[in-house]
Image 1: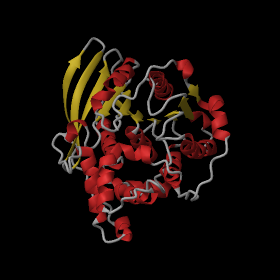
Image 2: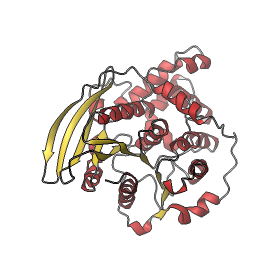
Image 3: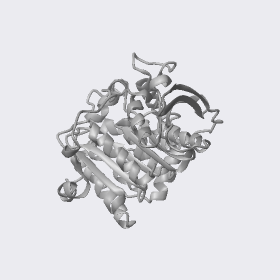
Length: 379
């Protein structure tokens, strides 16, 4: 399933925003978990995740050229190198009307099957509010998919996921996996590394204020958003959309299929190769641990999202989203509310629930996200 244009018409009045509207949801009792969540030390979580995703840094070698201009906006295409063999293409929108100097930035990450150009309309709206707008292609998406090898009639992204599965399966034991992770983690993790290298590139620009960088992502991009913000304090404010969930809760409550739908082809071939005709939660967990280790444990939503505190954070979710069910989301928001309260930053956490909405971001929510960034990053 793709998530290329998950925007639907909606009035701002339809949105349920933050404390009063969310109170009943957040105070309702959580369903019992089959396995109690393990709470790790935040510094340990951050250290372990960075150790997992870190790659050899190549020189950035940025290249940029202008693609369009108007009286109010300059548009550019750029590239940089995130690691040897990985050139990351991006688009950049700079408002003309804003006085010269260092400006705040909003980075927008696309969903599964999407590309950086899908974020252009949103970024133009950001530029109209005085932000520099930036988007990149995720791993094996957009321009980065064209020359990538493909397996078993899968697209480039799912082929990379399948390669990771096969590489991890070749390890001698689960213990070996812990010490020798697969060379790639194209499902979410590697794009986090690319975003961190994007921050390195933005830091070289004399028109960017490195202390005022916001990050927003949709679906897959939303997961990449909260993971990046959790481990890189250079993200000053974050808005993960239709993405915050507990992968472990989904396994325990047979709610994993909507997430697996986004990489179903690779998953089905992996199950066949593992001789698993019964694709149950136990096999899903095995698959997860080989392609994105730790996602049901220390890197799961309830464990890793609190690392963003006390920086400004807005969650945007659909009330009827099968990939982020209310009970799964609540495990995360409970942990977040506790973390922000402990740091006396309750007002830095905002939760926006779109009523009668599945896996979509409505235009009014998108506007609310820009308002949120404007409040905290002050363009």
